[in-house]
Amino acid sequence: MSEDEGQIIGGCVVSLDGVVIGYDPNNPLVRVPDLTINYGEIVAITGSSGVGKTTLLRTIAGLIKPISGTLRVCDTTLPSEPPRGSVGYIPQRLGLVKHASVRHNVMLGARAGHTKPLSLLPSKEVMEHTSYSIERMGLTDKTYEPIRRLSGGQQRRVATARTLAQAPKLIMADEFLSELDEETLESVMSEVTGYVRSSGAALIVVEHDVSRAKSMADRLLVIDDGRVNPFLSEITAVEVRI
Image (tube, rainbow, N blue to C red; front, side):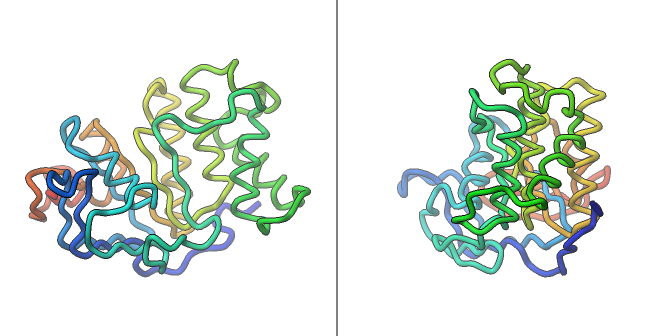
């Protein structure tokens, strides 16, 4: 299977216009006056604990309704749902089926991205994407292992494989590199960023480690005081304070 199969043409994948985010209208967490993320771009969200990083990611994913403003994802204005399979999400708690195998969990992603909603049997394409994604995460020897028998780091790799098998236009990941040793971390990060670069998809990742975030991202979004002040960072990323 070609890694750049189904390459995505550039343009805007996420736009926020006057978006206010949080759970309490009287005490919002984050205000985003204007933010655009394009296909082919890797954006990292960082900031101190409790400032709203995960809430921002979950709002873009359509899991939390914004307090106000207009939010568009994959050419769809939320709360309408983007096209099936276009958005892949790796939450902190992973959302894996613990009693099922690695193969079953990864196939859920492949089916979301490569089958019609009512299809019952996995197609050859689904099987290929499943096997390939498991291999990319170095889990071939765990293919038929139940999730509950895997370490925390291995489970994170399964969740990542599930999203890669989906071949989404947008990947959102919340601390997806935690619990990984340094060698595995580098490998997983390389596979995910490689997918983004070769396919033209976009990646938005919440990452508490600022140096790691800068090493992988084109832009760094620092949640801070509700203002957007873009400037060039000292390393590689363009830093935008929200």
